Length: 395
Ligand SMILES: Cc1ncc(COP(=O)(O)O)c(C=O)c1O
Image 1: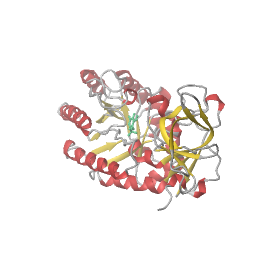
Image 2: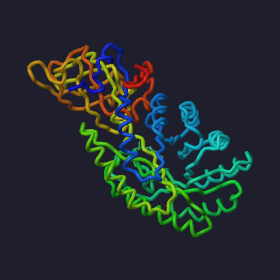
Image 3: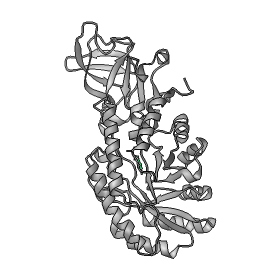
Image 4: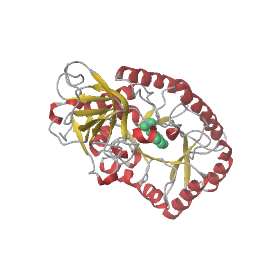
């Protein structure tokens, strides 16, 4: 069997730690996602999940647009070749400068999250003599089964409009109709969601409002269902991801009626998570009377998700043909930890590893293509990580 992308021989000499991406895998995943959706789907990759320039260029070539949340992301998207018409600007805290830049560029849609933001957009559009195309992000008050830090559609979260605020939003939209065009509604109930019931409930609730607004003098054309589809981080089974993608596509087809001209999607994780790995080198194997540790050269500075969300990532030894096992087949349980001076700096608790694991061995931390490199930091003044692309032009 061919080496998996993270064990590609070309990587074996590169200094660790580094991220590597599998562009061919990503392209295949995008094709699957696209083919599961209705013909009026517009996919805007949530570039907060991965903003690597080459990845973005490849996604643009695949025909995707982009969902962005800052001026920096807008510049990067532009650099990657996305046109303003392919951009949606999300986020709860857009600054006046960011809104002005978006209006100047004439981007496709600003997803608005509050009454004061709507007023600010109206003022800035009037000053700039521009028409702002907006969608209202709704908070459908759905409690989804995911980590509380990535749950965004519950009434206690800072995101989106409560339904009771809509009459006020309508008033602002009508007062400023010369500069504001309401083209749709949008929602995003959270990330890493694998139960479609929550998506279904959120869409139903929001779609009712979509219809009501169309009887109140607005002509809404689009419905933006956000992102949020998750993967099973405990499993390597890509076919299961594809089953979920297919079921998600069917759910969308039944829940979003054909009177909607255009359905927008903002996926991040489901497209890219599987196709990134973090390669790290074992520095020490430390056995104490209480616990065994594998200390590696990547820590929470390189991958925040385990420390921040208690996220699980599979970790494998790579190298030779029998790397996943020790020479005598024995295993031992270790915590895989980084070099950072924090007890939260654990990449994996209680991992069964080959008992002959030693300094100099390389490990692959898997499924880190989304919210991996983008959340890395230079904490403890560690060097910024490098990113390499397989099946692309970088390597
Ligand atoms: C508004 C919005 N859209 C899309 C996404 C992408 O979510 P995911 O990567 O789970 O698909 C996010 C993630 O936080 C988001 O906040």
